[in-house]
Image 1 (spheres, rainbow, N blue to C red):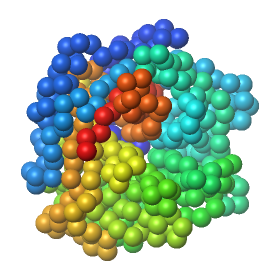
Image 2: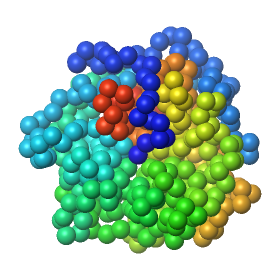
Image 3: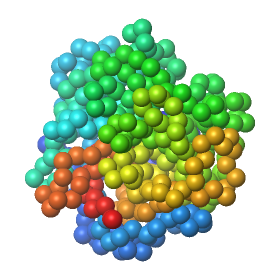
Amino acid sequence: MTDSPSTSSMIHVLSRGCGGRHDARRPLGAAALITGALLAVTGCSVTGAAEPADGAHSPAPAQAAELVDTYDLSDAQFAPAVARALPGGTPFGGISGLESLGDDRYLGISDDRADKGPARVYRMTLPRTPDGGTGLALVTGTILLTDENGRGFAPGSVDPESIRTMPDGTLLWTSEGDAEAGIAPEITVAAEDGRALRRFVIPAYHRPADGASGVRPNKAYEGRTLFDGGARAAVLAEGPLAQDPDAPGASRTRLTVYDVASGAATTEYAYPLDAPPEGTDERGATEILATGDGRFLVLERSWIKGQGTVGKLYLVDTAGADDVLGAAALTGGEKPVDKTLLLDFSPNGENVDNIESLAWAPDQADGRQTLLVGSDDNFNTGEQRSLIHTVAVALPE
């Protein structure tokens, strides 16, 4: 849900006003574009973030990805149906996952742990502007997430983080759980109205066990995507399992592939996290998105005191990586997935906030793909914001 225990004290560099209500966008400056291009060529980070020492990282090709603009969702308009569907006083925010429904329509899952309102998903429109950015957003409705009996979840029992839609219209959403309370992460198949239908079977060694094994607190199932026409799902834990390597520059989390029909894990790969940037001791993988050609996009982020969140976008290829499914503990000697840096958000010198969602949007006018990168405000009003960063992407071969 949060990047670190100190996230609530995050200092923002971006000014509160990204523009007026109708044009709440921040175009990328020329100097930042030049810096970004140099970064793409060299693969270096101006924040001092070290790259993995295991050679699993490749430099980005020039102009692989470009930040187009940023939209502040506090400028969004809300349809009356949203207020009618929720108890009075339920706040908007905590958008931790985005999913495209086509035609500028999206789902945004809130990571409210059913504390501030019912576990929920928002229906939104995020229109494209003529210059390829994000226009005035509209929150049009809600989906309430419930158990198999249609009952709402008890406060603290779930932590929704990612959502995808399957070809038949059903929903697939992920809960991070609560490792400190012994609540395991879950992957739930739900009907279009949010009622749970069934759950995936996660590997036993992913389940938290007194801090000695399983997912770590606040470092569980942050990211999930569908691929192969919805037949398979890839789930990415934010951080290493308690029993896996976690040394700076050698920290490895797990990318687990599931068969959607059976809900069983079929393969698993070691994912090497970047070493934390100077000024922080944490790095996390917060979302994964299929590219349609067997590869994935992955977001990594860190929080730096006095600066805010810094993040990177990677292209990830599992070809040639070792299958570690069933390995209760990693040794560090496994061949991990390959990572290619596409975009470092840091050269803009601005805080991108708590980035942790990815969704495709209609293509740019020049043919490049459009990627929406969302940030989660964690309901920290005045300290963090729900933002939509528009990124133009030209995926390398």
